[in-house]
Image 1 (cartoon, rainbow, N blue to C red):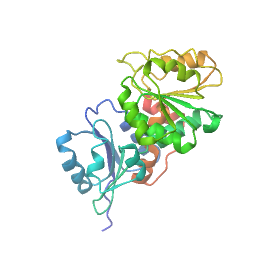
Image 2 (cartoon, rainbow, N blue to C red):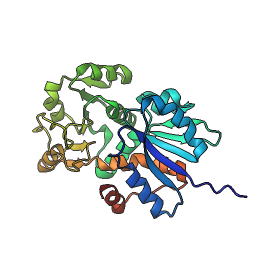
Image 3 (spheres, rainbow, N blue to C red):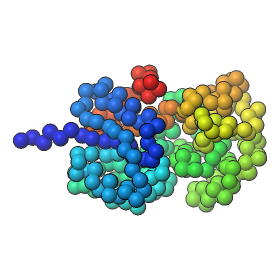
Length: 277
């Protein structure tokens, strides 16, 4: 008989109930009439390797990985892309037919696709980028911006030592600036990116001077709850191009869905509405 196993995928993290990824992938599965499933899975760190080795035997074709497991999966995976190695984290796993685990990072791809769609006039070579934050998301963003040809990145973080570590990893095109000087780098930047959780519902506001944002600036915030953060509100009021963070979540999911289910999904208004529902 033909193997008619239903393909399964999901997202692994802890906590995981808040994740919007199941809404997104279920929308695509319905849209394309695919007989598959995508589920949230709360997995503790001590159980991660056992779970990952078991999932392919259960019919899983892949999984997304989120906090706090994105770094640890690199030590478990059998194959890791150069991109995931450079970023130091993986968010997308493909389970091969032989059970081997392939780890990749599509966060940078998602960030760039969202930026290009939201700010089609932005030219990477037009000037420096100001990146606020030095966590895992910042690593993916910096990697993508450098690959795109941004000449210089001004990097600032509330804890400077983390920013200094990124400069060591990514090289001389990174210029680390103290957090108290964040307003100055915004004024000098063609692109401003907030990779911190500041401004998210339940978190403190992003309290850095934003008066340096002008009509020529492109501003994007990885926070998407709320969809329009104070940073984006100020950008719009200044006549700048403002790009919300929801698109990054959506676009980073495209390569994984295509690998798992065999169709490259289209992004449209219905996609965004499904995630925001």
